[in-house]
Amino acid sequence: MNKHQPMAKTVSAPALHLAGRPRLRVLGTAISLLSGIALLFFAGSGVWLYLQMWRNRKARALKPGWFWR
Image (cartoon, rainbow, N blue to C red; front, top):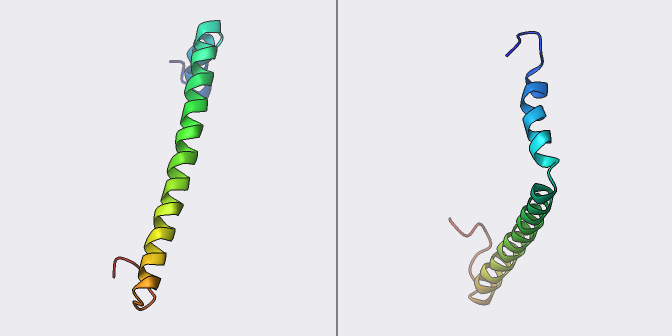
């Protein structure tokens, strides 16, 4: 590596070469889409779990506060 060449340029050149291939573009898009869907699923399920725990505490008339205390 040339010490005068920025690190980002030396790392991004091979990545851009690989990303320029048609098969990898489709694969990369599919992976990105599936990752986004998984992120939305886990975020939604976390909110749902929190609401269930909150409703359960409210139904049992426990003192308000954090669940782990």
